[in-house]
Image (cartoon, rainbow, N blue to C red; front, side):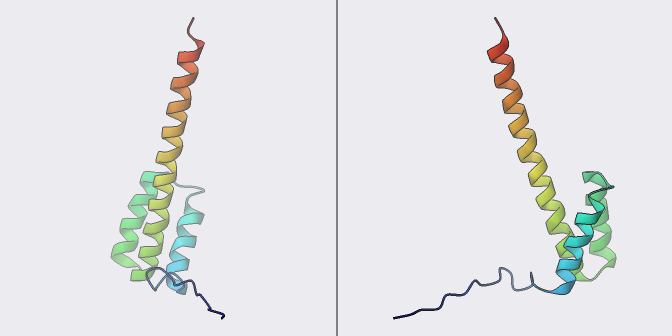
Amino acid sequence: MNLMTTDPAPGGYTHTPEYNAGRADAYDDAHTLTLPQLQARAAEYAEHAHLLSALGYADRVLEMRMEYAAVTAAETELSHTDRVGGIA
């Protein structure tokens, strides 16, 4: 017996052009703007852009913020263990 399984789109809007355009804009802006500047621009998107574009931009900025937090935590842990191991 064969069963076909499908991968449902989470949220139902992640495959729309507007959402993906917002994510792409955030990705492009990340090369020239800092994280606080990206958050400010996401707030501007929320007020002035298409709703799905604003959602896509904000989602990507949130992902970048979580990535930054994870890297910071890992580097802090590594720094702590290197320092403790180097003390004689």
